Image (cartoon, rainbow, N blue to C red; front, side, top):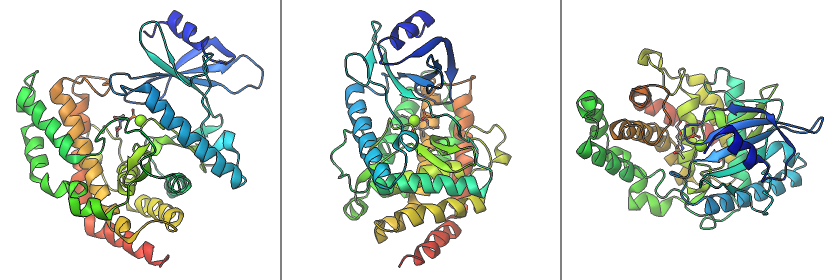
Length: 369
Ligand code: GN1
Ligand code: MG
């Protein structure tokens, strides 16, 4: 329940001094609902209050355990490196019952964190500096977590980046077609199907035996990096999906948003074009951060991530469109279809340029051999 009265009530269950009169809706997430509140104390940090989508994150207790583990690991690393853990890692506010989430009387789950002031995010990256700084942010994130073993975190959303499972969900949506939308999307479905076997790279036993599972972020959109006012990397946010994964998932999902000159949901697909200098800036900065631990097999898999992530994102938007927009928040009828078409266009361009992209990664990696 997200009535003002309930939100105020929820706020009171956390150890905070939030001024509830200043509450406003915040952010552009597709899943959770986020609110911003000022601190009552003069000079005190503002807060973010988030209603966690419990339909999607079915085990909030485990999700919170993952977040707390990762946050405390990152804070230690940042402190040891002489950084400021309060500014460079997000900080959750404990509830009055000692837990880092709160279940209200309507069954909704909430959490609260400090809002980091004097920071910004970009939905579309436009300068090489922004791209480079995003590469530093996600590369360091990965580097700092490289000594946290796989198998420690809960799998909060099973098979999150599993292309086979995503394609099976699409097949199910095609078979059910509850809103008779299938006829509108047959060209997209045909296209997606043609690439299906090539996109099952990470599901091949041969790859799975070569690629180490690591603690990964799994939602490395460029707007999940907070940059400071000088456009320098400050903090990686949105830790909902931290769990085990392949490095290539995080690399591919970051490139999906960095390299695109247009928005994820661009209406005019002509505007979906590759910004190669931004790809290069991100990749060079990212590889520098991960060079110390990335394996040759992982390096070779990065380009696969660049193909698979936009592809599965297309599949997921198409599936949700067919299912009647039950997963992602939509702003208008046909929004998921528009997103799917824009992501498919991006995939087509990435695929057409795959050799040039791969070559850049390989050449860059030579600096570290
Ligand atoms: C969702 O809510 P947001 O924007 O952080 C989704 C990601 C998608 C993304 C597409 C849990 O993330 O996987 O890549 O939308 N998160 C979940 O923009 O499904
Ligand atoms: Mg997210």
